[in-house]
Length: 357
Ligand SMILES: [Zn+2]
Ligand SMILES: [Zn+2]
Image (cartoon, rainbow, N blue to C red; front, top):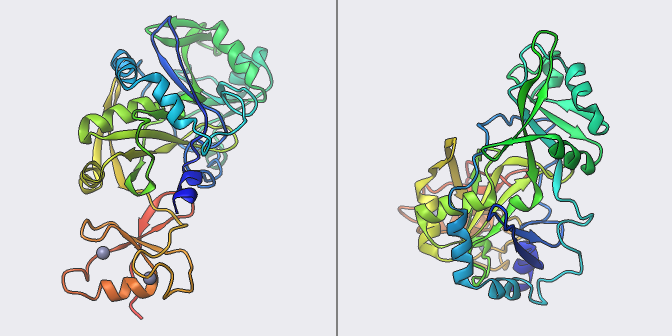
């Protein structure tokens, strides 16, 4: 149980660096999977991702000081323990720092796909995409933003190099048939922003972890961690779910708490208002449902040792159940209306009607 959880948590070596220029702190996980490996769904071909542009975190200093207070060396040693370490080098398996998928916003309204492609072609081979591009058969990005899918990560670095910086945002001038040199916002996704450890002294417990749905794409793990910590306290980790191929945010995240009270407070709220910079969005919070847990009632005795298919998120239960035990426990007065959560195709938990047999 403990061993499997540790593996499931995917915690490996960590290196923490502090960029002196902007006091941004970076937590680089060594190893591929940020948190729960094998739960990511394939990239939903150019799924929605508008959102408002990301603002620089206004509390990085706070984060840095909190990390210092917690003891950076302690963070590193606790998470880099032999049980969790891997020989993989820093960043990612190829030393990548950025997703090959880059958001570009504020495009001239009359710029078409070919013109966007040729505007960015000098940085390397790319494909231009936007949400529902295939279905709509539109030749123009309908909402003034698009995604650049570069073949090589080095193109992203070259693009960023060519940008001008204003208020910590990156801009590049692009022309359309009617508008010359319009500054458009370039928003690369830094891979290290997908994970943030707030309290490395606590073991990550998947049973004190919540799933956060509808996370605005520019939100970084550090920002999610700080928001949830401000609301409920006790946050030890936050992760942004990314697609396995391009490692770009999918619009969901996970937050692990160090204590049951914070976890219960978060799942009881069901919705939280994520406010950060330009971002202000109500998002859904659910228990994080795993598909490799044994029934907490019978430990597999009544279900042939199969993994439990149901999780009850009611605070009086908060347990995994096999079908048999679900029916037994929930036939008791007061529990008839509990709804089983199952792990959905990817990692989004959903409620299902339980069929009494
Ligand atoms: Zn059972
Ligand atoms: Zn229940």
